[in-house]
Amino acid sequence: MLLLLEACTVYLGEQYVNSSTLSYITFLVEGCKCFYAHRIALLTSSDAFRAMFDGGYGEKDARDVEIPNIRWEVFELMMRFIYIGSVEITNDIA
Image 1 (cartoon, rainbow, N blue to C red):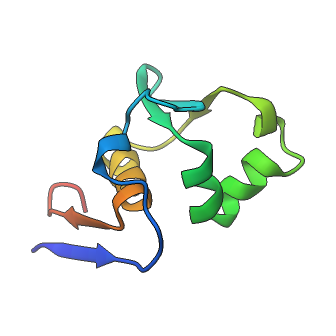
Image 2: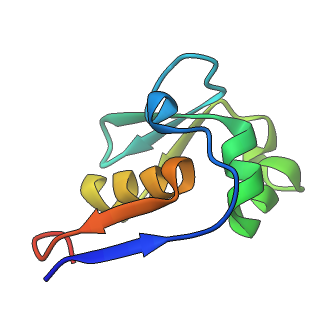
């Protein structure tokens, strides 16, 4: 089974997915894997990220943020969706 998710908004695009170019935030996933992210992509895509990085939380000024309790593959798919607007989810991820 293949699930294709799509949304309508403005995206930074494939070239910025996990790219350190102009990135502001580095997520640490599974304790050792880094994912480079761009503040503008996070703020415009999610109320949760907006609260983290533009609200009163400790992450507001953080450059490195640890994300516990999520598999790398799942986190990467979520971030790809934020940057590109669609992802393919295969059975081994679901």
